[in-house]
Length: 79
Image (cartoon, rainbow, N blue to C red):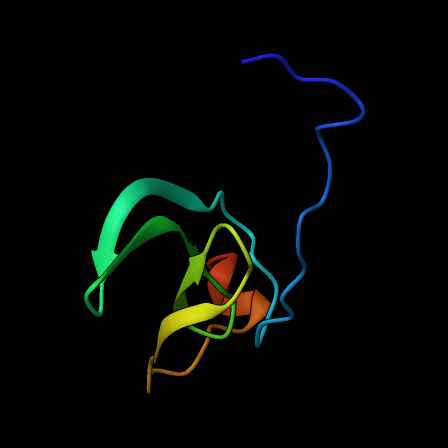
């Protein structure tokens, strides 16, 4: 595929419940709720995981954990 300034850029923006510190996962032609589409999976620092329609940014599903997030001190090993 050819990439140019005219065809490359931000397609959508979807504010989630926290920052995404890792790389999102992209899967093409995935069937969710009976519909096949390209999906981006993203996990946030608020312990949530989202499946997002890669074409238009709509949230297909989300899972929010009941576990509390780590504090900076816990994450860095200062329990």
